[in-house]
Image 1 (cartoon, rainbow, N blue to C red):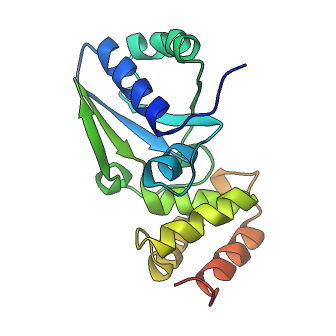
Image 2: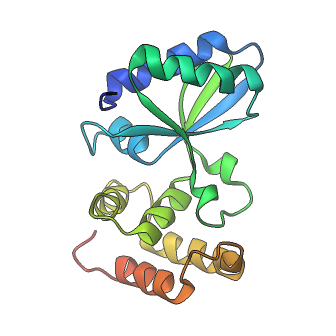
Length: 177
């Protein structure tokens, strides 16, 4: 059984992946990995990533890295679950450079909205942490949601009315800063 990913194991993953890279690229961490690296959680079940480009040598290496580090790694980002605004890569905060790879947190507004849409307890806490930490703000979340709203039809699993209510609940919650 693979173990939980804490900050040290996530850093080991980034170093291991960078050792395989033969060309420059970007790796975007999302979900629990973002929460762990920001210190809101001690660990996460898996490390969700998006690679650009998703070069074959890196994809092939993931399986070996998963086994050697006993770490769950998934190819997943908010763009797999909700529409994201153009320019998301430019809004993705830099984490570090390892060899030829640049590591970033996937667009934090997109992450927050994907978590709001999913609605699990840990997701709600992560969104609260993003707001409390000043990494996203309520107005920005509302604006981002309104910008992606016309494209929700591209994700038939999303109940647009329910998603809109959830965004409204989060962005009007007086308990958040």
